[in-house]
Picture 1 (tube, rainbow, N blue to C red):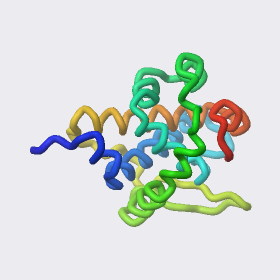
Picture 2: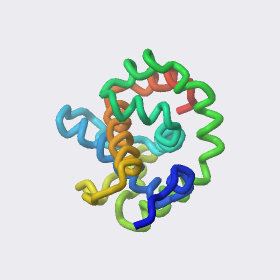
Picture 3: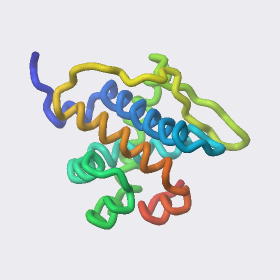
Picture 4: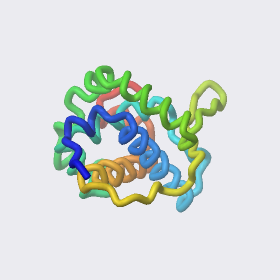
Length: 163
């Protein structure tokens, strides 16, 4: 099997859809163990997932940590230009979400005035992935857990983004 280059991974919406599923699964898993009101992430959160996990330094930090604030303390540059990167990657995020919705991994639901992304497939997609792709999927899951642990106002301030 031919090895996928890092550039091809970033451009591949199928891998991005898997990463978004993994992010949602991590977010959901946090609430299964810590029941609260909401168990699914808001749609706005997804526009920051791909820019964070496709940035090699931030992916390494998310992959090796379980705490967003520790990652941001150790690597404060993560939030630099995150909003700009999210804007530039919005088409890929939309395409990846579309694929995830169409393939039955995720669904979109509205509650009050907010949209939430829910899991349709509640289990991980077990596959023997090359290390780079496995790292993206596991890093996305950890990022989902980190987002679930953090109040939205803290995410907005710490990541310097619009939520």
